[in-house]
Structures are given as C-alpha cells and as structure tokens.
Length: 574
Image 1 (cartoon, one colour):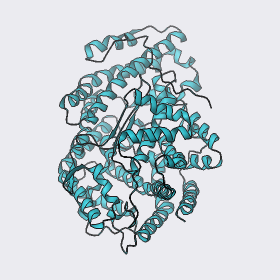
Image 2 (image 1 turned 90 degrees about the vertical axis):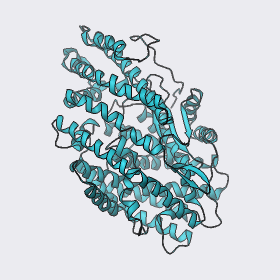
Image 3 (image 1 turned 180 degrees about the vertical axis):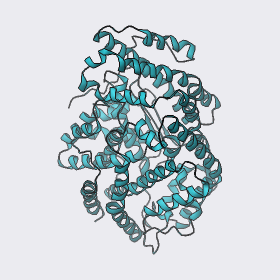
Image 4 (image 1 turned 135 degrees about the vertical axis):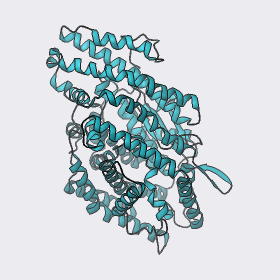
C-alpha cells in the first residue's frame, strides 16, 4: 500500500495566514461570518463546511499547544495561566456559537443533499452535540477543564530519594526491577508513602470533579454522569451492559491466565510468596533490561524498529523529530504519563512521555508511535471532524503497534535471551492489563451512580472492586493502607473520565490484528493502515471490518483471543 508520510500544514483560506488566537474580540467576527453567511446551493454548504473546519483546526491546535507546554513544565505559572485563559475566557464563548452553527447545519435543507455515506458519522455526532448542549453547562465545563489539570500539577511534584539521589516516581520505578528484594520493597513503600502524602488534596480534587460532572449530567436531563458521558463520547455501538459483560468475561477467561503469569513469576524468582514489589523483578544473576539510556537513543532505535516494520511508520517519527514534536525524558516538574496529541492544523502530532531507561518505556514509545501514525494517516481527510476517530479504534492503532514491533526487538536488545524476556514481559502485560482495565471501568460506573459518596464509601467500593480483579497469587497483606487509595494513580479518572474501557476493547482488536500479522504480515499492515486512514468517517463496526476484525467483546470472542495469547506466551516461556 503506497502512502506518503510527508505531512503538509493545512493551507488557510478563511482565516488570515498570520492569525493567532489571542482573545475573543479578534475571534468573534469569524464566527459571526459563519453564522450569518447565506447558503443557497450545495457548493455554498461545502465551502462553508471547509471554512468551519479550518476554524476548528486552528482553535484545536492552539488549545493543544497550551496544554502540551503546560504538561512539559507544570512549574511555569505563565504556561498554566495561558492554558487557563483559553479554558475560562475563550472556550466558553465559542460553545454557544458552535451550537448555533451545528443547528444551522442540521436545519439547512441543503444538508440532505450531502452524500449520506460520507457525512453519516459526522452528522450523527453533530446531532448528538445539539442534544447535549446546555447554556448553563458552559461555565461548569470551563471550570472542569482547569480543575482536571490540577492532577498533573500535584503529581508532577512527587519525588522520592533512593540511595541519596532524588527521582521522580517514574524514574524510581526502575528500582522495582532490582535483584535486591529489600531495595525493591523499600522503593515500593517510598513511592506509595509519597502518594499517600497527597491523598487528601487528590481526594478533595476528585470529589469536586465528580460533583461538577454530576451537575453537568443533571442539567442535560440525564440520571447520572455515566449515561451523559456515554452519549458525549459517541458510544453508539455498545452499552453499559456490554461493559458489565466485559468485566465478567475478564474474571472468567483472563484471571486464570493472569494467575498463571504470576505463578510463573514466583517460580522464576524462587519465592514462596509473591509480593507486589516482586512483579517487575528479575531473577538473581539476570540484569534488568536496559534498552536505551536517553530519550534521544529511544527515538533513534524506535525509528529503526519502525523502518523494519514499514518505512512509512519511521518517516512519521522522523518528521516529528524535525518539527520538535517530541518530549520523551522524565524530569521533575513534568506531568506524569504519556500521550500523543494530534495537532489538527500542522498534521504531525506531539508525543509526550516520561522515559527512564526501562523496557516499559519502549512499550510506551511504540504505543504513542502507533497513535502518531494514526494522526498522519487521517490528516489528508477533508474536514477536521472527519479526523475525530473513536477511541476504540485509536487504541487499536497504538496497542497493535506494541505487538507488531515484538518481531523487531533486536533493535533495542542484542542478546536473544533478553529479546525472549522482553517478549514474555509484553505478553504478560497484554494479559495483566485486562483486570486493571475492568477494575477502573467498574469503579467509574460505581462512582457516577453514587456521586454523593462519603470517603468511607468510596474506599469500601474501591477495595471490593479491586479484590474482584486481584490475583490470588500475589500477597498484599499489610498493604491495605496503600491499596485503599491506589486508584489515585490512574490519571484517566481525573482528566478523561470513562476513557478506559477503550483500552480493553482495543486490546482485543490489537490481538486480532496480531493474529493476522502472524499469518500474513503485509496484509495485516495494509488492513491496519486502511482502517486508520478512514479517521472517523465510518462507524466503529465498519472501521473494525476494514481492519479485518469483528467488533465483538462477548465471552466467546474474548476466550478465542486470549487462548491465542496463552499459546504465544507458553511458546515464549517454554
């Protein structure tokens, strides 16, 4: 499949080429133009849609850069103020216009003349936005945009001292791979004690977020925020009941495999009891995998890996590097986590992560690299809205890349034995992530069905749900204090509510693509690229079908896919 990765910044035809977003006064005239413009024929409508798309791309990119800069340096007050200004002074004034423009589109008699296949998902999304819009929710949404970023500010300041040196929590995690069990336990406890030091502010922040989200839902006529958010996220193709089925399938079909993984780990380490600080450890005499030392080296090796897989993928990363669209190394004052942020006007996205020299950082890099490839492939689509693809396919892009690149770990590691260990670790991760996804998702359902919870009630609910998806092979005794608030380490709960089940659904899709890859590499990669190039122009089942997959997370389908992973895992271990 021939595709060019050469990204082109969108040409402006509506806004001046040198226009930058500074304040509402300079923006409003363009919204008025769109709102008041006469549409007399289909060509007028298509031209109007393109102008609106251009405006959306410029605004989206401006907001993204404000967030990127702030997460790269959470201690810079000016960057925080610039982000807050957009959220509080510009975004709230855009929303009423956006609603009026949506209504203008839907109510125009010309809209029925647009190609149904081409515009179906876009118009479906526009109608959903009209249904959800409430004037009284605008200030609440603005406040939430600002509040959600406080999680990164609080977490970005978390450091601990190990052997006389200061480390971020991401950097300190490498000590959990040490042969020295006492050191592992010490670091595990220090990390958790540091998290506990900010438990109260995080509890208070989360309580405020839940209350405001609940108010949004009530204002829009929903019984709870979960039902509101399902609608807002455009979950047209599955329901909360499907999520419950997913939780049960994880318990039935995946937990036994997770127990097997931890049983193997205990045997490898020669331990009678497996404790949580043992889960990343290496057996005595085997050094932890160190696939790179700096973010620059990580990037060079990932470009080489992607080049072996398909040169198009490598070209995407090279262009991002040339454009300085990468911030990879962990440091104090940087927000936690990792993300790929699409930039609607530039086309080339931005990758942010906290690399500290571990194999898990390689996984994060190729994961975010998969998202980046998705951004490149969908960029040529005609309208910004066509590029707004569902998260359930976005995460297939990233998680499938994690599995495709297992074939090329020799780029990062010289020793065949190390490659085998890295493959084993990745397959363990494929399985062990499912219980955590189910835990976080089920917890969110409980929270938003009980938004007026007390701290005692949320602790009890969390412990109960966590226990449902915890392996009996790991001994957590005496660590109840850490476990009770361990949900606070999941930034999605604070920053992107209900965005987590997507990882589970997409992991199933990624496994399906990997099965294809094992049979016919080129066909699987073609299916992958063809599906991603559609952006959000098709429904989820159609996107999955283009990728050669079925959109299905029934127990039978989950069993079939996990059996394939089990056989690959057994083959690697033995």
